[in-house]
Amino acid sequence: MDLTKPKTNDLAVEVNPGKGDFLIAVGDSIPITLGVIPFGITCGIMGITAGMSPVLIILMSVLVFAGASQFIGITMIGAGVSGWGIIVFTTLLVNLRHLLMGMSLAPYMLKLPLPFQAVLAFILTDESYALTASRTQTDKYSGCYQLGASLPLYIVWILSTALGVFLGSHIADPLSWGLDFAMPAAFLVLLAPMLVNRSSLIVCLTAAVAAVLGAMYLPGKWYIIISCLAAVLAGGLLEGGKDNGQ
Image 1: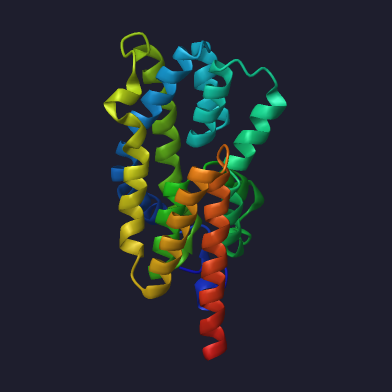
Image 2: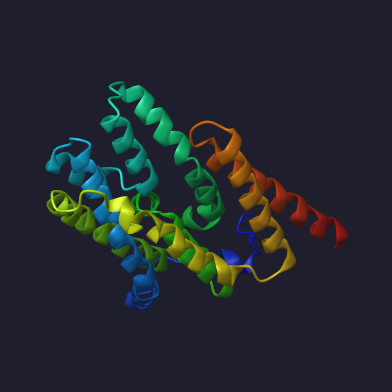
């Protein structure tokens, strides 16, 4: 998949296509949205366990809306880390992959009104990106489709976090339920149908190997950044080879 070099026809953007694209995206996102629920509940429970107030936990989901970063932030707060600069920097590193996703969609999103761009950028997630990228490959990009793929995830994330806050006193060890694997499993379901050719398989395997080796030998969450960069490098080399061969 290469959205960074769209063809001329691919840059057709529907700014106001009506309710059709939005409703289609909502339907497409339902299986993924259901997978968010246990993950959000776990986030709420862990926030309570870390000693955060219920209001602060819910506000974090409303204003931050970044699952991995929220888990890391909550873990650091629970471990007694008091320096907000360290927490912000750590969560920034984890979410640097959003720069890659944003650059991929930038040729399309830049044709949308600025306020709409801001909303779509804020609620962009791995899952909504995968749905939008997959749909753009088979059809054309639609801002309303991206909104429909992202908004249900945002709403359900907040509600499930709130539910986790209220259930926090009743589930002592949420990770023993396997709730932390819900989102990785959901993302694998999105990834598998996109591995349709040699290039995509090589990029996927490169990212997987880099992530495993990085997790084994690098501190913190650097393996996420390393795997992203390795995948981008592999994809660039493969696409560059195709261009030179044409």
